[in-house]
Amino acid sequence: MKYLHTYPAVTRLKLTTLTVLLMLCTVTASAQDGPQRYWSDTWRGWHFYEDPSPDVKDKPATSPKALTPAVPTLPPKAPELAAFERLQKAVEETRNIAIMQPTEANVRRYMELESQVVERASYFADVAQRVAWATPELDPTLQGRPVGAKALEVFEQQQLVDRSRSIADLGQDHVLFFFYRADCPYCHAFAPTLQAFQARHGIKVVAIGVDGGPMPGFPDARADNGIATTLKVTQVPAVFLAQPFTGKITPIGFGVLSEAQLLERIALVSTPQAEAMLPGSSRQIGRQSVYP
Image 1 (cartoon, rainbow, N blue to C red):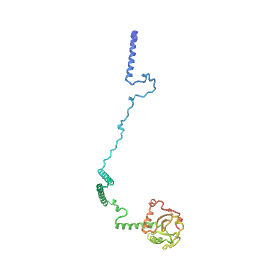
Image 2: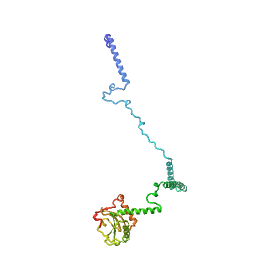
Image 3: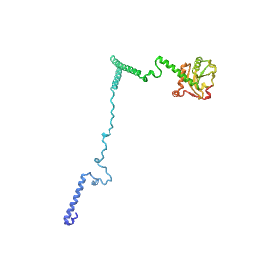
């Protein structure tokens, strides 16, 4: 083009026209090859922003298959469990059929299946018993109260000694309140038991006459000064375990009790777990009001 001035005027015009046509062809070809631009469409006017065509949208980073959570594989069921479930289902179904249609055949079918279940349970009990005999820590007859007569006798004797010793220790700072009425025959029948209990186990018994009357065997019996009302004693004879230094009083029982019952109940309420087992059973009153 820098040598265009050397050609005649007509030739320069032709070359200029040819150059413009080549430029127009280049622009037209690029417009056809690529997406249609907004400046080539006069009917749309001037747009500041235009959404991209659908074919140029970003593809998802991951495929839908990758987002599907993996289903955990369950372990295979033991054949014994499957057999048990089949037997259980068969028994239930045959029982329901026999109930709805109690024909001889239906009832017989149910009873046969039930007999199989009982037989299996009996065999299981026999095996469990043999395992318990060979494993002392699994034998229920060796835990807690024994079953055999001779072992039970030894257990009760040992328990009596242990409880008597603990009540003797308890008697160092505790007493038993014995509420009675002079005209109560049950109170008179219960009084000798309390006398023997006091002598054998070393815990003092304080007799309190609700009506102020005497009680044979307790020459130092005291008249009620209102403590029976405070403890809500509505029935006699009544026995309470009291700790004078703290003012704590716990009911032991009402009515005529045996020596064994007194031992068991006193031992139970004097344990550290007693308050948790029987909340609110003990009463706290002033120390000056413990003794009438």
